[in-house]
Length: 416
Figure 1 (cartoon, rainbow, N blue to C red):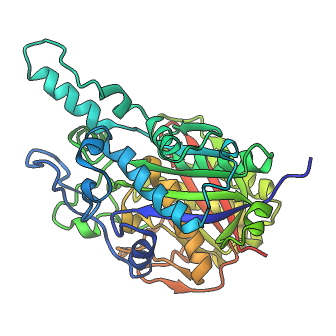
Figure 2 (cartoon, rainbow, N blue to C red):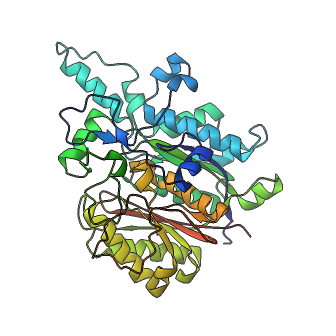
Figure 3 (cartoon, helix red, strand yellow):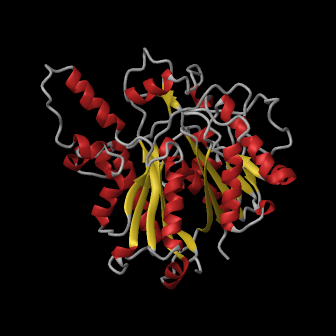
């Protein structure tokens, strides 16, 4: 069977460093940090008092007050980023076959704030179960693609992928395959997360996953730096319109890039820690290269998972060295989480967008906040430290890994 080609024709972003794609790219290329003291709740007794919150986001700019109350923030973010992506794609929704348009969305946690608030209200009450009738539909992770399909009338495949921090990269790969196999002509894909909450911060602090650099939150996310001490929690969403190449070409669509491959693997090692030798990460990149039908030396840039954790950053770079050999030293390697923080289930989506924009502009965004060399990291790696670097980027890879050992890898290529 001849697989169909798949391209990206629309982008939407809602991130801690920009509330649309243009602002997001501006933040990326200029090395902007999205980390700052938390404003959503009192952090006096929390170990970590900062996060990468959205700046200037107001639900009433996008929804009427009644509608906003029915949507958890993660679902709001999904709808906002999708609206931008659909407009960007130029799709005429009156002309598409809506049975051939799917929505495959990623979320690692879903409506955590809704669940948290309902439990707090119950605990503070008299024991009578007075729950909001929208509690369940606001909370469940699959409600984001459900709401997208309802808003636009898309009647193709519709579901959420949940694989922790790999969720939206998994969603993108599923979307790729639906179009490749001819089941869909268009798929809205991406991911959203809104875990900067009492429960989210408290839970990640309890497992010692977060940075506690409260004296300098803007520099706390420092992938590959010897003094890194954990990730910085972020929130937001990224949306991509994936389209069958001939379908996009026939309507004269702007094409950002071709999605040429996706790889999946599992560490089968630990609930939260990566395999120290990166065995699963080696395999996921090999799987992705094989799926794309390209050689390692064709890859120009890798946006790493790079969360700024002591174990994860080193393990990923060891894996890159094993897969790419000497060519690894010719690749621009970066971590945009140094700027956005870690958006959990939305990370794969916004980082895929960063990879696509790096190709479009031939500019690799920096890994900011690096000052101390880690002796465990090969000094020959080009980690794109502290300043964006101009170079021809024809093939870009995006890595995303999640608790539970879930690994996902996606490859993009300039359209030809």
